[in-house]
Amino acid sequence: MSCFWKLIALWVLVASLTGPLPVQAADSAQVAQQLTAQIQTLHKIKAYVLREDWGRLFLLEKVTQEALTNVQDPALGLGHAKTWLAFQQLIVMFRYSKSFMQHLDMDAIHPDLVFLSENMNAISTQFGLDDAPYTKITFNVYSQIHKLFLQLKSLTLPGPLTKKVDALVPQLGALMAVAQEGDRPKTFRAAKSVYVKVREICETDFSHISLGENGFAIAIEIEGLNQYYNEVAQNFEGTDSGK
Image (cartoon, rainbow, N blue to C red; front, side, top):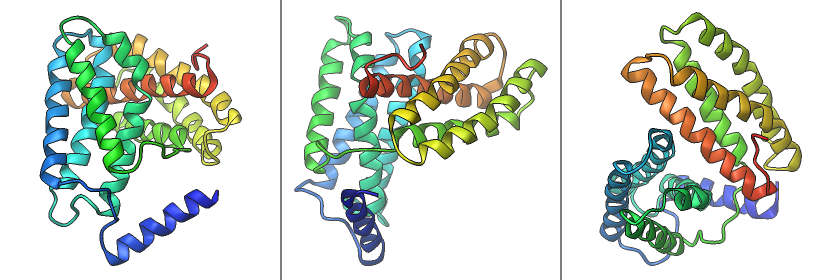
């Protein structure tokens, strides 16, 4: 573990015992307003995009809502360690969604996309996280996908999909073991085949079966996470992780 992350770990530990983290000058009501406007904007954008883009928008809205919930929680608040980590996740998620936003760009929502970019830049500066590194994106993304596939297994699924999920779960576990070491070249190499298999399930199985309301929400989140990771991998490697 680098010196930077040792300091961050110590910072979070101390904060959990002694109180809130020091955050650059920011007002809770102002930040809550920024996050609320961001959620409303993401919801508006959804009406203009294709079904295949809903997963990413859902994911961005979800991490924004989690940050807002922490800000508004009297037991946490703006400077608490848990809130700080929620904002770190939010900022990193948007940082690696720039290509996705460019893909969505059209006249009808261009001002909204500009707002999202400017709003996140302002939040990043307020939290002093505009230059903060993040070294375990692969682990975090596929740990969540692993959890979601286990939830999906608890539902009634068609036989062929059940077999695919059963085969994929241990592969996700193996990837997580490698990814614990951080976002290194060997981590991205290990993730490529898993990314492709998850994408194939999303495209060939999720799109052609009825999963019910709960299953649909799980499928949308899996698809969004996998698409998000592909953009992350392209930023790190300069290549499409699915190819």
